[in-house]
Image (cartoon, rainbow over all chains, first blue to last red; front, side):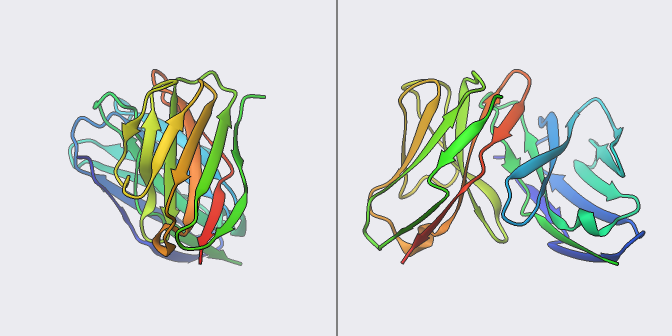
Length: 113
Length: 112
């Protein structure tokens, strides 16, 4: 079945720096891709949902890139601030029909001021 | 407001104990899911359901049962709890056509 690998597990950056988190997946039939943010003690907050036909997606303060050829999904926080400190998870859905979200292992991001 | 509500928020039980985690959604979604979250593993799917009376096995089902009694309600049952089941559990619902997921606030379970 689909496997999703997320790197790095921990990331520390200074305020104003960029932070990049990358996921690779194995199933070429995956067609929906997600990035979630989880603050301590909280549930998952959807940052962005990307459909497989779209390669570059811009949100507020971040960009999501999808490279279908390499089966790679990345989240780039362009100018991180302390409020971005949280755990981030990628997730994918493939065409298996069950609409199961398969998650990466997560990245704990710390942004220092 | 459409939502996924989990109860209890926190639960402590002893090894061998019987635990039921509850989840209710008001999104009119067909699909519901139970995940567990552990450091280094992300969220892993335990069981899921397409609708009332339906149950599908997820990726880490051992030691868990589930039951979907209505469109709204999905329960996770641990009949002989073990310390390895100490975890943070999330319920979610989705409209599979649009892949719009809604997550509950989580239940933190400690098995001592």
